[in-house]
Image (cartoon, rainbow, N blue to C red; front, top):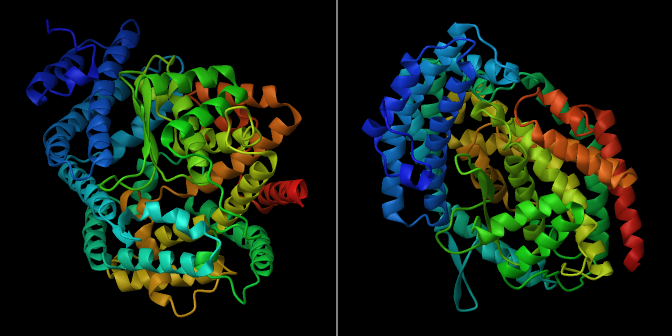
Length: 568
C-alpha cells in the first residue's frame, strides 16, 4: 500500500517525480471494470488535479514577478522533469480507460476528449512542449521589463495607458510614440523568439503525424464543433456587418474631436473632450466596487467573489516586472480560482475584473462534478462565462459602492460597447493571421513576411484610423499580441464568446433572473456537454453568420444611442 496523497497542493509542490510515480503506477496496475471505474476515476482525478495545480502555482509565481529567478528555476524544473513524466503516465491511464470500453455516467464528452488527446500524444513531443513553455515565459520576461520615462518617473507600458485618455492631443501622441518606440526596441528579440517558437510547433505537428501545425492544434484544442472554414466564414461576416458599423463610429469620433484624420492615439480619449474617467484610485477600491456589482447580479456569485478576496486569490495591480495581460486560472485540487491582471486605474480594469470574475465562477459552479476530466471546459464557452459578466454588470456601475454617477456610467458603457464592436475586426485580424502563419509556416519563419501579412489584414479589417508614416509600427502589431506568441489559435474564442455573451445580455433585458439562472446552469455543466449544448443551456446559439452578428451590432448601436441621451 502507498501512503495517501497530501491534502494540500502546497505540500505536494515539494514532491519530485520519484514520490509521485507510484500513484500513477498503482492506477495503471489496478483492476478496472464497471464496479471499480468510479473509484479509479476519482483517484486519477486527485493526482491529476494536484499535478495541474502545481504547474499553475509555478506559472503564477513567474508571472506575478518575472524577475524572480528562484521561481523561474522551480518552474523550469517542473516543466523539464515532472510534467513530461506526468504526461507520459497520464497517457497510459487514458489508454487503459479507452481499452476498457467503459463509459461512466456523464463521461461521454470527456471520453471523446481523452480519445483525441491519446491519438495525438507522442513521447518525442514532451521535451518540445517543455521548450515551448519556457520560450513563452521568455516573452513574458521581455514584455514585463518594458518601461518608459515620464515626467521624471519610470513607468511601465501599461501605466502609460491612462495617458492615451488625456484630452490634450499632444500629450496622447507623445505617450503613444514613446510607448511604441520602447516596444519596437525589442523587435529583434521577439523576432528571434518567434522563429524558435514556430520551429518547435512545426516539429510538434510533424512528430504527431500532421502535415501542418493548424491541424494538430485544432485537435489538441478539442475543436469538434467547428472548422477552419467556419472561422473564415466568421471573418467574412465581420467584414460585411461589423466593419462598416465601426467605420461609422470612427467617423463620428473624428467629427467630435474635430481632427482631420483619426490617429491611433485618438481612440481612447473621450470624443467630447471631457476629463478621463478614473473609477478608482487603488485596487482595494476596484475590488470593493466590482464586489458590489457582482452581488447585485447574483448573491451567490457575490459570495464566490468574496471568498477570493478573503483568501488572497486576486493579484490586480500593474507593476514593473509583472507579466502582461490578465488571466484567471484554477487550482483544481483546492477548488479555487486565481485572478491575475494589470490594473492602472481606468475603466477597462473594471471590465477586465468582471471578465476574469466570470472565469472564476466557472470554477466554483463546476466544482460539484466528480471527475477532473468533466471540468475541462473548451475555451469557446469559457469565454462566454467571462464575457457575459461584462454586460450583466454594466447596468450596476452606479450602485452604492460602485464607480460612477449615471452620466459617467453612460460614458463608460458607450466606450465599452464601441470597443466591443471594434474588437471583432481586430479579432478577425489576429485569427486570420494565425491561419496564414500555420498554413505557410516556412514563409512565416521570416518575420518580415509576418509583418507584411499583418499589414495586409490590418488594411482589410481595421478601416477608419490613419496610420500614415507609421508602417513599421502597424506592421509589428502581431508582436504585441501575446496570444500569437504564447497561445496559438486562442483568439477566435473571444469573438465567438462575445456573440454568445450578447445573447445572454439580450435575454437579461427581458428576464434578468432567468438569464442569470441559465448562465449559472450552463457553467455548472463544466465540460460534460458539447459546445453547442453549452451555448443552448445559457440561452444562446453558437454562431458564425451575418444574421447573428447583425442582431448583436443592432443591439449595441441602439444601446449606445439610448445612453447618449443621458448626457446629451
